[in-house]
Length: 330
Image (cartoon, rainbow, N blue to C red; front, side, top):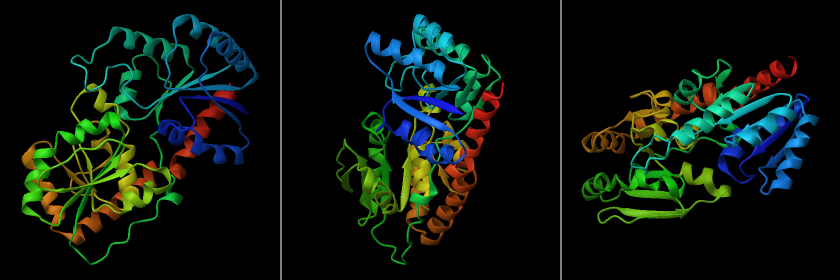
């Protein structure tokens, strides 16, 4: 079986987690994969899409094409799989109005032109089912071989709250500054670690600013005691696939999160961490974990088990291969 994967970029997180890390498994099971980034320029696109007929399946990651290009792709491709892991049919959380007729129309066109759709979470699947029944949820999986559990020492001092994410998402964390100021005033050994390439300061709590680095990412996550995943309750946030929360749980770090979107699917309140909506709830739930070393460890280990069972590469690679086999045999 030959598959052409068209991705956003070889160094883009979504490409790494939703395509590239599957390649060794697919190769072991007889899949000949070619991975290419989307091309710019008319002639390059023409050449690329014409070559789609040389493959059993064309896998398109997230991108939406104008109608004419879509017709040309459909004409050349034997089977199309469309994969997306964000609310691409809506504007992002910073927009005053999430609704966009253009985005919705382009999304519908992509789904209608595809033979199968892979959605990153339940919310995205629900947005797809009115258009096609050939849709399956496959999360952005974690390769557990790269995520050993953190070492829990008996030392309860110097608790680190931590957040990892991209520049475009740090506004979620920055809105929590009042929470950090209250906790920092009360717990002098508490620190906030931000793993990103954009940062902010707080008055009452030490902020450790760590530039994101792929090679140090797992060690940085292991250095946290409590992971943070604040989200807004809007269509864009509901489409997020919780990769950062999964990375924390994979290493055994418990989390406190907003009960929005996939956070509700991943984290069972009181089992793998806590849900928090209001400022008061964030302070209350974080304090519980700050003051209880054994609870942090227990919740972290429960979270790790959950990732292994439902969100690991080992659990999801056979599922995506099954979809490819079903399509290629038709």
